[in-house]
Image (cartoon, rainbow, N blue to C red; front, side):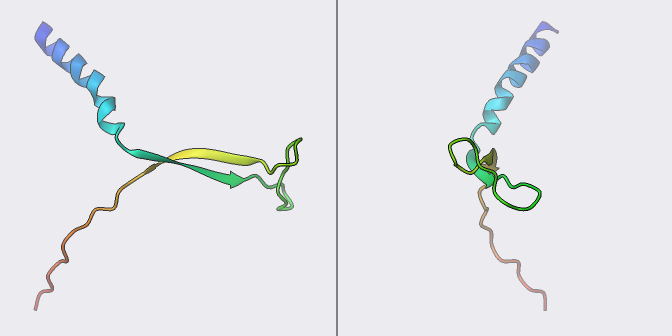
Amino acid sequence: MKNFIFVAGLCLALAPSVYADAEKAKVCVDVKDKEGKPVKDAKGNVKQNCKEMKVHKKLEGTEVPVKK
């Protein structure tokens, strides 16, 4: 029983490292007010909302044969 708990804990500890390989890209969008004009900060720069997104690789495959 102790071995089972140890193995289960080890699997849970290593699980996040499997998903850490995905590349992330930072995407920023300008903040706009109700009228649609860009909002500027104290320095005069346009404010932006930035988020990090995962970038998935497109898998290449073979073409499906057409039935006659």
